Length: 160
Length: 184
Image 1: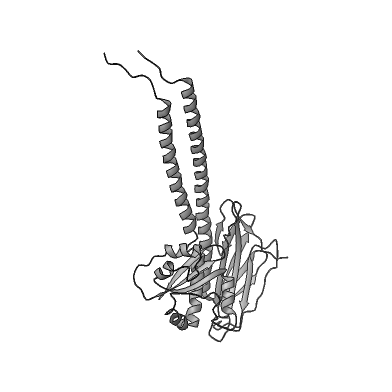
Image 2: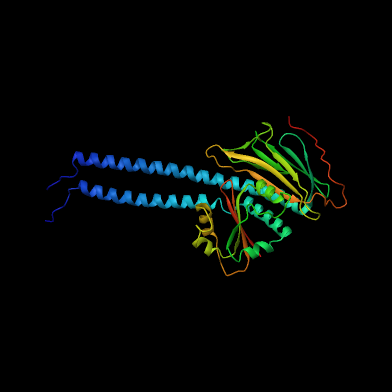
């Protein structure tokens, strides 16, 4: 007659199963945390408000002309133009202040050199994260306006 | 037949461990539910901000602004060059912002913050005109509605910035502000 093993689980078996369940839960929680962090960051990128702000700056650039900025880009792939003197009336300064802009950059379309040498160009970690999120689809000859705002939001607009 | 099963101590230890896991899972589920709720509200506030901003900016660009009159506390009349007027009004008690005939309500947990100068005024309006050369923008219109959340310290303001040349009024004379109300 076949002997029936009817001893139930050992404590060590229970602990092993519990250990596996805990590991799975920790992995799940860490993945959720990463997704949550990415969501929080992405919710601050290119919001309707910051896109309107970028368009306002673009309108101003269209009016003032950006020939000198483009020539300056031949030596640097990115320029910090937060305090650039476009006019002598203080209009640009007022615009930056009203739009609540923290930093404004003018750059080449392909920002890979900036990302690779971010320390050289004095790019902070928040801006670097935003630059890494920008898509570079081809070798376009256009330019970018990249802005960070005082409320922690970021925006980028391509100028043709 | 040998029939050992669990000993009391094994059962107790297992029970304690399973209880701890159940507790941790319960807490995680509650936290996640809270976060989902928070994200839903964040999406809602983003929609409110975007809708108001897009509607006002669209009118300011397409219909061309003539000027702005104050129509009382938290109330602005935006006058366009076709002489039509659209009212922007904030009701802090009902938590609504209305532009023209379209009203948007803030999601739960969000509130309008009064401006620094007047506790009854929930719209900050500023117009700056500078001595720019002819045919260039010389005026920056700044309409700000401050919005805060009870749980975090983030700002969810609606910040409407529009630049225009206030000397370019078509056939109309220069705009003279004619307020129809005050906010004291």
